[in-house]
Structure formats: structure tokens, C-alpha cells
Length: 260
Ligand SMILES: NS(=O)(=O)c1cccc(F)c1
Ligand SMILES: [Zn+2]
Image 1 (spheres, rainbow, N blue to C red):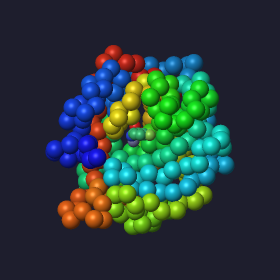
Image 2: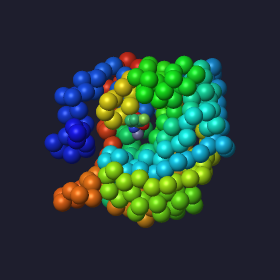
Image 3: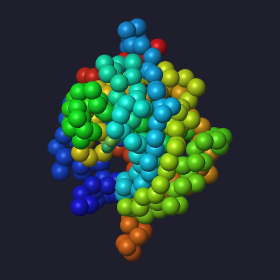
Image 4: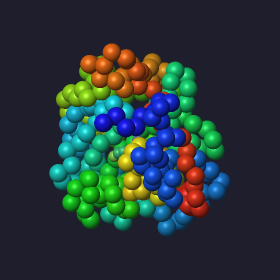
């Protein structure tokens, strides 16, 4: 049922009631301090092999808008950097704020961005299914990309133009042959640390790779995300989908490494 959300009655400060790991030792997101992040020369570049990727659909799951991918083989993977294996692309989704407000999950020296894109990958070398990987300490790798408001993003239109089709919670529509490579910034320099899912069940199974360079999107494009609803078509109380981000969590002694 509806056991968690981002409201006053079910928001991030209450998630620990049903998900005690919310107070765990490797929770996400975090506030990243670039000066404290150690430059690790052993950290190679990340490689994104998305050319054969196959998007399937775009859906409103009541918490975010998600684009799912065909993950029955290694056609689209992230590898290198802190990762020992290639991790298979499963889905991507976004977190954002209200009009003109901040909405990213990770922050950089307390600075938050308008939105944050998460590309979710799983370790299909060691685990049979995404579900199994999602509960393993080295099961998932999530690539985080900051979105800041500025110029129109040429390729984000493909996504924002489809959002009207998935306005209500539970709606899903075809979304074929979208390659998320077009959403990457020019630099793949990153910070990396061991963390968790940023929504329930908050499993501590994520190697986070957060790109330093944000991408620019227009306020108009951001406003289209805010026309999505947390609520279903049948519900009479419409709730605009916005501020669907978890605030930074305690670092608890973790080290953040920098690619360079
Ligand atoms: N926001 S996130 O940590 O990327 C995430 C939350 C829940 C499920 C998932 F696959 C990814
Ligand atoms: Zn996310």
C-alpha cells in the first residue's frame, strides 16, 4: 500500500518507522565536499556502453517518472571507475523540486541543483536478477547527473514531450529507442562512494558515481515534470509530483573518492 512518500505525513523523516535501515551506516544521498574527497589515482575513467540500449517504456510509479530498459543481456552497461564488473542498465528516473526550488538529492558543499537524474545499473555478473542485486552490498551502481536550469536541453524534449502520457500514478506508455547517452555532460569526471537507494526500501547496495558537471535544462522543461501527479486518475485529491527528493544523510565515516 501507500506506505511512504514525500509529504508531511509520510516523508523522509518518517521512513525509518517502516524501514529502520533509514538510520543505517551507508545511507544516501550525502552532501559532497570536493576538498575532502580524496583524489584516487587508481580510479580509472567510467565507460558507458549504451549504443545498443533498448528502452521499453516510460511510467509514473507514484514517486517519480521512470524509463525502463531491456536488461536480458549486456547490451547497455557501465564499467570501469570503482566497478569490478560491468553493471547492466535497468532504468533511469529523476528527482526534482518545486518551481524555482532546489530538487537534487546529492548536494555539493550544501549547494543543491534543480534536479538529479539517476541511471540505475545492476551487477548481472554476480547476481541472477535485479531484485537479488538490489539487496547485495555490491549489487547496484547508480550514475547521478545534476540538472541545472539554463538553456533548453535539445534531447530532454523527447522525455518531457511524453510526460503528459504518464500524468497519473500507475500510468505507463511505450517509449522505444531512447538512448540516455544524449543526457550526459561533456565530462565524465565523478565522485564515488558506497551508499544506498534514496527511496524505500533504502537497501545499502549502491556504488554511487556522481558526475561533477551538471547538464543544463530550461525552466520550461522542468515545469513539465511538475505537471506529473503523485496521485492516481481515480483519486479525487490531486497531488502535484514535486520535491520528490530525500535530503542528505550522515556520512558516518565514509570516504568519498574523486576521479580527478
Ligand atoms: N533513487 S535511487 O537510489 O536511484 C533508487 C531507488 C529505488 C530503486 C532504484 F532502483 C533506485
Ligand atoms: Zn533516484
